[in-house]
Image (cartoon, rainbow, N blue to C red):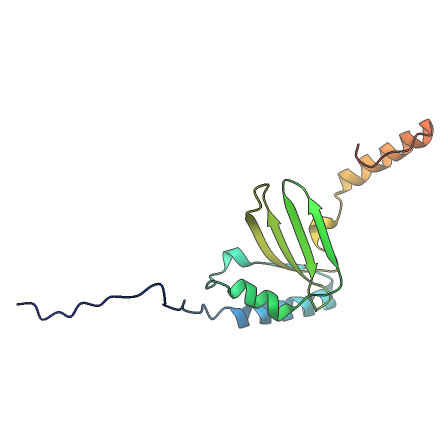
Length: 143
């Protein structure tokens, strides 16, 4: 005769165990913002690389709030860069063409790095503008 008592865990009503990483992430944001002010050096926190319990990313997003600027970029899927209530702190979400989140970051910078053009792009733009000025033909912005 077995004396073991069967234990059944009801996963439908079980609450996820918090990761305890929300507060440390917010402190990391604070230190990164201090560093940006002191040195001008930007920082990025990859939220997908940090263990978080379900919905803790939403908790962080709510704690940071929403600021005045939203940047929407279309490149291999949408990227939405939202300034938080703290200037210089950006909530960055990248999605693929199927609208699946592929990257989730907090970027601490004057302007998120993805917005800044590369020098090669600037040189190409200068060359195109120079050529267009010689031909006196306007660009439609999609070429």
